[in-house]
Length: 370
Ligand SMILES: *Cc1c(COP(=O)(O)O)cnc(C)c1O
Image 1 (cartoon, protein in one colour):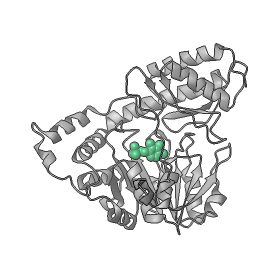
Image 2 (tube, rainbow, N blue to C red):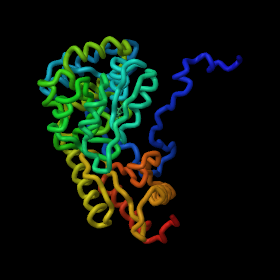
Image 3 (cartoon, rainbow, N blue to C red):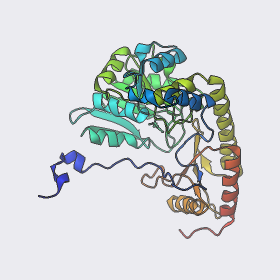
Image 4 (cartoon, rainbow, N blue to C red):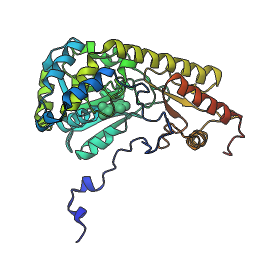
């Protein structure tokens, strides 16, 4: 009777919130757990933020541009599209949430592959929506027939996928679009680190939505800007359901400045890809660990202990070993396809050397009892 939460809707009462990676409060950690960029954003970002604030912050009295119109125009130009093809959100999580709001309900299912970005099932639960979870097998190849047979209104495909780093070629995405008849959302949070992306398909497929973010490739996870590229009619739906002022003045200014400095971002993205490829080679060739080819800024690898053993306990033992040395990585113990792996974000070369030395030390240790 006195429990105020008892008034909530039943689906809200049983909600499981998304579990973000650890953000330690104190310094001294090597953070390889949330796929943040190890390099700072373009220096133009801080300049733009200071300019936006001005000497006294007076501009902050005023609401931001409600549609982020200048940023939409700049993004359209950047991708060779029209402003009507662009929607800007408070991080791509906001964009994904709004897409679920448009296409998912108790009577309308949304689908996604599994394992993948674990926010999707949470967003579906918030809508009290029906979910169709399509399982990968260990090959991580696209389960094309199962996606077509899901008969969902909207299907969320992460490419490159998280937490595996495996990218899907446009040929595969076109096969989905040929056999699946709902809205296909390709979450391209990591596409700037990949060889191919689905943006060129937008002109031919009005049911395709590409979602991007400034968080990873543009080193702006703290500023919260993401966006969708799609047919103007889909952008129109998102505009109907969004918050009136969903992206702050500072966020819009920061993203615009970042977008203007392509040579800076080409350089740091190139460096991350080189570090990634060297680390994948080290894990697979030198250490002999099964490691998926990565098209992202993280590596998904199955560690072997000194006895050559693998499995959830081995992965957990290495996670704990690294944690004790203040190195944070990510372990996903709840699914059979992920439990014996660790996801390691790509840091700087120096950071990866610190990790490498710790891994050498661990491999020399007595194996943990099974
Ligand atoms: C990090 C990530 C996001 C979230 O990006 P934000 O723009 O920071 O909200 C979305 N999708 C995937 C697959 C991600 O890994």
